[in-house]
Length: 149
Figure 1 (tube, rainbow, N blue to C red):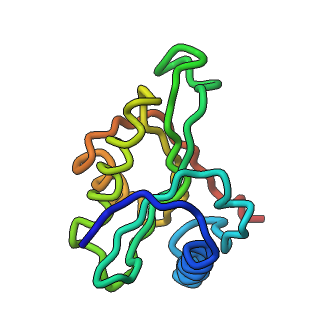
Figure 2: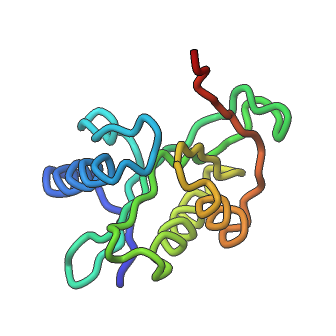
Figure 3: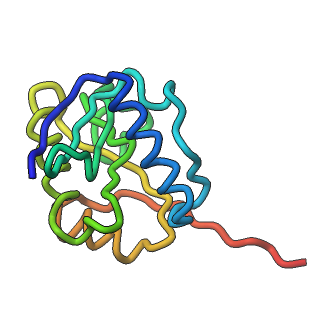
């Protein structure tokens, strides 16, 4: 397995869009929809490859924090993870962790924090992954309940 940062080209774009279509079909996240090129363009892209095939990706971008004063001063450099995805048949093999850690190391020169949001339906597993395995800290939650009439 090789983890590397890649430049966006048509081949990479097509693969990431196909993965996002698969992710949508899984139904594992609230409101997730397949990516369009504009969702991906302008991001730093990291991929995991096995035998020349992409099996997972992470993309995100650096910015300055806004409306995060409860955890960091306004304007702090952050790297926001937009998506982290591993093909279902390759999950639970450490690929997601390796992608995250590689991106973290790559972003360290320009960011003080890694941040992300999730809309997963399996919050227990995702919290275990991000908090227990990647040493992230829980910051906030937004919950919902449909009102039955």
